[in-house]
Length: 440
Image 1 (cartoon, one colour):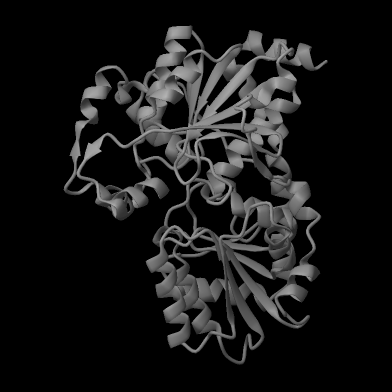
Image 2 (spheres, helix red, strand yellow; image 1 turned 120 degrees about the horizontal axis):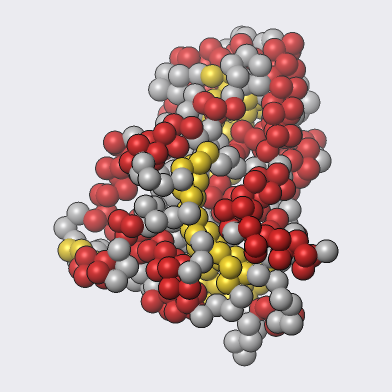
């Protein structure tokens, strides 16, 4: 997959003019933000859902905010993206606080998004990927136009550890929420309750939401993976580019640089692994930087441990970069040390590249992971346990091969085509049949 993005023409002509004569039904996806430069697991999921729907006869569009991007129309590898201006309905937010909210958790309001959605032609369903005001706008349009809408939870508050919740709310300290008045028209509390379905990434999250919304349809709906891309990746090219010799053992972690991703524990584990048993081990950390202070701390700790020659930091690597897929193929072992992870799509990507995995038992991994068969579970709060599990895999070729084979077999169950087929009835049976007919 090559996610290329280009701005719409200066004249303001809509990007769907080539499709204007098509009767294809429209499905709009609404995430809080969607930018190529700050791409993560949520963006990966939304892109592939939209692209797969386009293949089977829908016109799938992403309506989102201008957070961390410019307002206007864009194209991401054939998927249309429309970004709308908006604001945070709070008084007293500092510039630093707004920046933090832009990256994680801000409750954005955009009236232009609401009216554009309200008058979108051929709209047959809305797929929300956020709650808050943007979710409430999707809900209201769905009710006014008598359309179904579903909401996917990409890491909701019910399963979020208390410390992570505290960090999300910290930027709001000292500000006044005048957005309560807007909730008279856009009631946030009803977004989940009224959805045709609440889609959760893990069984734990499904259970928690089923308890909170007992009258709603709450389903487990896992993410998928572009297996072909990672299976065809060139590990040798990555090793050559970054100067890794053939005998070098490469430990890989891919995740945004933020405390939640817990790269510090992996760095501490890597320090413990230095020595006679694994003398040629190197650690590669790849991720978008959400927290500059956290990344700086990791780099300073690396320097203090004298590991500058053994640890490679690669920040803000575009998702469509060949280096990303090649890194998975180049690695001898992939480690996911996150404290909290809604699903863990990077594990599927590692498996698709036939790379063994060590991970915490959380999120989706608790559902699809089988300890000793397709991955090794580790206590992510313990650098010592992470180090022990890493050493166990890297010093046992038979175990590494078994985990890699088991993981690759598991990844085959998570194709985007299969996931979208299971989701179609939620968008409305009649419109799904119309889409298939339009395609055929």
